[in-house]
Length: 143
Image (cartoon, rainbow, N blue to C red; front, side, top):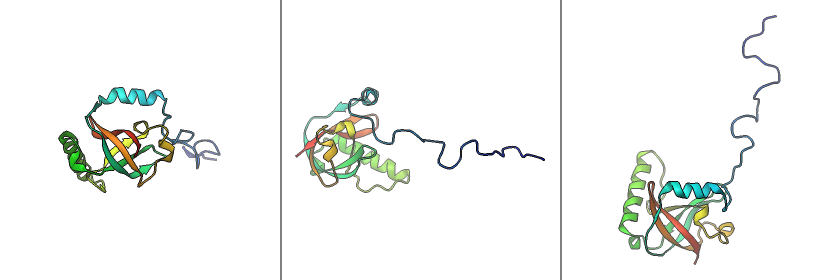
């Protein structure tokens, strides 16, 4: 009998096996070294001022979201310019951008007590930072 190359019995990667199996699907914990390394790599500079806004989109399972500032014009000029550039870049890359004024944030940027309660539509206080990728929100707390 001739056995063709690549044919196998029940060994190998079948349905439900392979890439990403067994890996953690949620964001790292607050005290994880992952966030410390990430913060060091980003070269963040916090900008002066405190702002208010609303959680516009939040994906708990992935640990990130966006805040819509209540008064976009009150943000520092460098932050507004970075948000405008990020919006243009996203559109050029073919991404569907809901709102050019939304500011990105992720799990460690949120007060640990607020994090499990965070949801779309929630009013928050925050500060903004600049890094190599643009503008983001940090120091996020409940209003």
